[in-house]
Image (cartoon, rainbow over all chains, first blue to last red; front, side, top):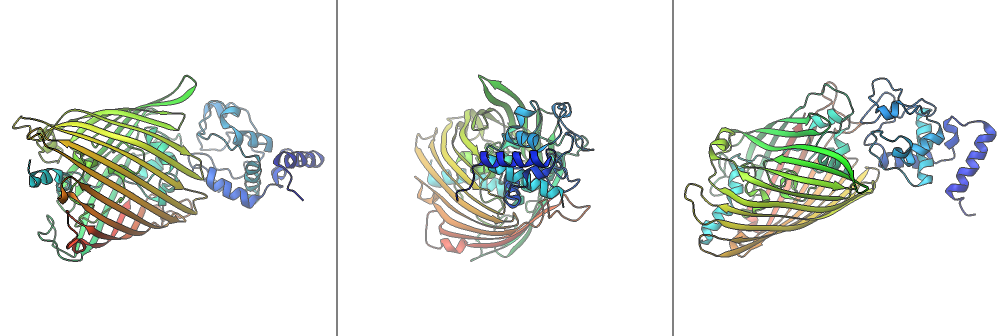
Length: 134
Length: 424
């Protein structure tokens, strides 16, 4: 049987999520492959971010990012754009931000063009969700 | 101009090296890690400078200004380097300040003032004590002013670099200031005695400014010019009293680069056209140098577990002597590759070839290096409170197929060395 396309997988997850009421939790991306997401993180994110609790680099620690309000990590210097964005890191917002940071938060300081591959984004979010659970 | 005279002038850069006029270039600078909150591995292949990852290239082109937004970082770093070397046959004459063979030397100690002054101004200045020549001197310096804007819908970075060594401002590890090998034994013979003017020929004893731009993160263009420092100023800076004097000259660079996260590429062209008075104390005809080259690099970065790089350059030089009207040329070829496992264990090799109209200029050889860098990564920093300390231990084998124009006895110059290199 052919593997569902990323769009179909996302739709199925959205449906399952709506039925389960998990909009603001990392469970929304449990269908992503966390192990593969770890590799995506290492390739795309790890120069500037850590998933260790309290370990800020040029970017803030992403430990426990799911469900957190944006720009709330004490001691990290956020851009004014991020501070005033009023975002909560729901899976949808995280996916949108990873997809195109400058589009969701214009004027933010993250110098990253975005991750275009939806499947990789799902895997990455699954990895971030898994690290928060550790 | 006779061959001996020409070789003597071409060999000036290495003489300068031996005399400590231009010590080894700046490498990993931990004050940048403190400034950005990133580990050494974020910007450097193998978690140790100077080979830059795409993030390192962006940091440099951005004027060394990027940061984690926190103030109060002290923009100072230090570097120590020592080596021990053995040559197949003792050198005759022995290198300056060293024995003819089996040397153990403390090569250098450097202080770096390296960091950002504002969102638009940053740079580094290196002051080096040469432990072999026992000389303190101003070393590589690169100060930048940058601004980001959009021009016709294209993200554009505009910058100025003020520096004292042509190619020190280059963001890739293919040109001379940052090219492979990144370290060499003090008693070694390097890539031979002949080199192009752009290959460190006037490094340290000139001052110049280049304007550069980066468009859409992919295109890099630079145009600049240099002036010779006055001998009195050179002397005050610990650089000796070189009497050559640059007249009109233009340094230029064009490159395309692509960072695809898993891998990165660049390909470029570069050049330096310069008119040079051989001796400012005896004004006369000037020599005209035209150096031009092509270079390319590839990095497989993946998850940073296995990192492979391949870099190469070809530099050609045409020299028109003002004194006798003669013309000569030189061709330098470099090809090197490296593999790093877990950004800790490294193996690299480099092929080098120099040849020209002067048969005595020909040197060809192979360099092999193995190294270990235990720290500089998120999961393996040095123990607190020394977490900013980084260390590279390595061994090199230099093999020569041709040296100074002859195959006979070339292998006598084969050199084995070990080195210890630390930054903090």
